Length: 181
Image (cartoon, rainbow, N blue to C red; front, side, top):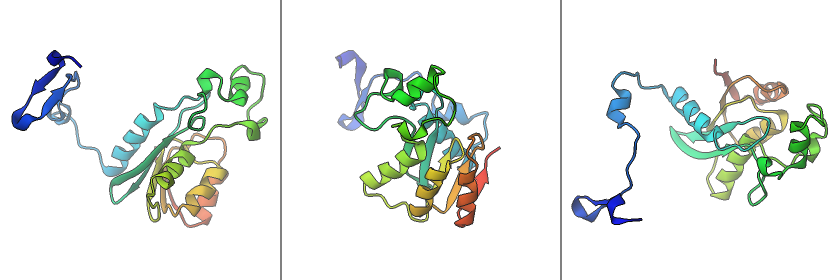
């Protein structure tokens, strides 16, 4: 990085680059501070923007004591080409209209956002027991099973996925489910 992009600050700290983002004071001046649920759902939306699925983008955030433990978004496994690069043949065929919704789902190699968040926590050695999960969609049945076994006690989600059985399963397991409107 060139010297022009770096500026010396007191104590030898160097500021790298410049940001065109407004300062927090400018952002909050005319807006109300979001409550914690809204705040973490907003973060899930940002996480969702990393998804490289041809069909849907979903983000998930695992939180405990108002601290983020892990995040996840839907897509292919690590080191496998992304869907938009042809990494998942099933997603490509579905996108091209050669498969119907729900057809050959078992051949999809993609992970759901909830799965990726739980896996990320495990990979980093972070316990998810008694945590909460914020999801930009409602979890499918498979993800619900993982949420239950990961010890997640509360799920805040949106209701926009065809598989509503996941919600029923979570409620049956006494996981508190809240649908964001």
